[in-house]
Image (tube, rainbow, N blue to C red; front, side, top):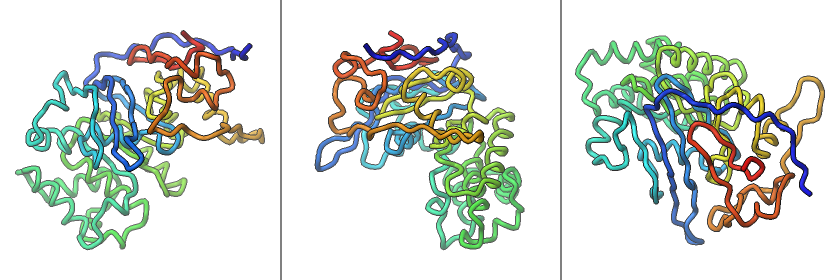
Length: 326
């Protein structure tokens, strides 16, 4: 008989009406070996001013999710599903309208790796100015650029410098300021603290907290669960192109239900000297991931039907995609 863990079943998480809604989203990429199913039936909802943290191992589909919302998939295609903002479909919208009214204006993205997001041959001012020009900003451009720089803790003089003249933390702030230039309603932050020291990480986290208090909604993509515990209202744990567990930050950290979530949290180093846990095995290949639970081969609580029958996701407000709770 499989060993069932005694976990507290959290109360259903029911946030207010969402302004961003993702339903049944599936995305694939073509390769010589076959189509890679990077996302499979992903769904969640987000309300205005709310932050959603997305965590999981490399290649689980986190960045693809952000790029799909931005409609910036390079070589990928959306096979099925729906994405809507304030009730209007983003996937059915003409590209010209989406580019003019939504991309960067209402939804922006802080891309992973500040160095690769800034052009080394142009000053920060030139790159900021290009964003404003491309999107028809008709106000005081210099004033808007200085306002964006100041909002992330940069001196206005930084605008006249080149990327190589800035530290890693300053570059990350510049990329963040660029994403905020047009004051979007939703910001997707893909690994916003990657390759930064602990002090600069704390500064970036505090910046995101402040912007959240001002009403900006966030989707924060990261490997670091400790970061999400500080800023995310909701947490989605991704595995093998799917969201394995979704719920409030309090529920996911306080009473993790999915064995994969439990394994991830157990792997966080403890200050008390306890040895961190680990998850045996490797993630599944996404060309032919199989019909059952994608975590079955690594799960300590695996049952016979886990290898053949896919567990159901439940509602978009909170669930653990696991047969232990069916």
